[in-house]
Image 1 (cartoon, rainbow, N blue to C red):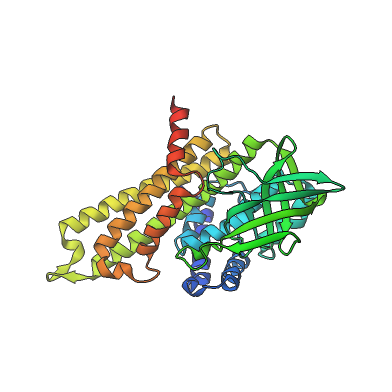
Image 2: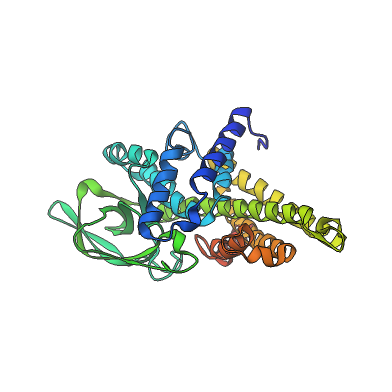
Length: 371
């Protein structure tokens, strides 16, 4: 694996971080669905001139270590909006690029990359686990269309999306039904809208005999492969989010330790504080390397991509919680301020552990692969 980025890749990552910092500077004020949608759209349009939006969506721009580095740079400016943004742009884009036909790609991919279209993937149903709980949402072909019925309990970015990629059963495999907002027989109800996780713009989706034209249907495709791809793509987003929030928490704790004086000297002069920062730094650097390797394996199409992504998901998300907790011990009361990076990291680290492939299910996958 190549652990060093080229100068061009470094510049692209720095540019991406700068753009995200400017757009998400007032993210805490986006408390309504309309404001959150506007923020996601603004970020997409600001990043459109860069290659950030192309990674994994274009044949000549694979999702690699540099793409992971750029995602980490964005996520440090707001993990919640980052997760919603990636679900609405990259995950849906990769689904279309990998499984859609040429007409679907021509119609939807370019607007997604330019921020002219906001999408999302609707996968989870009663729980966030799609490994042990088979999908109940089903499409039935009928007179030139597919009639879709089912319920999706937790659709990230659903409150902002124009287009929903609904995953459900179709004939002998799985299908993806591209449902436009405002479609008849489609009901959307906000979920967690007034909580700390409102930045996800999540919703519950109910489809009651929704007719989807054949032009908006992907599949049927192999269920095992599609679910594996969707989980890997989501886990890559969560890994980047975990590393980004760790970086932000470590930076804030280090800055505080250097500038805050207690007992007549900077807090960092105390051995206990220095040791704690050293432990945090070690976890952050190790997590970052694992994240980069995840991207590299993906670009190289290595067989162990799936299991190593699970390894990185477990280590990075759990390390994020530990780093955030340590940062709060150093920051004390300052770390409890609204939207402080350390407080946000602690909150979103727990989400990263249960979303995608949960850390406990990931451990089972790792164990199966090791035996």
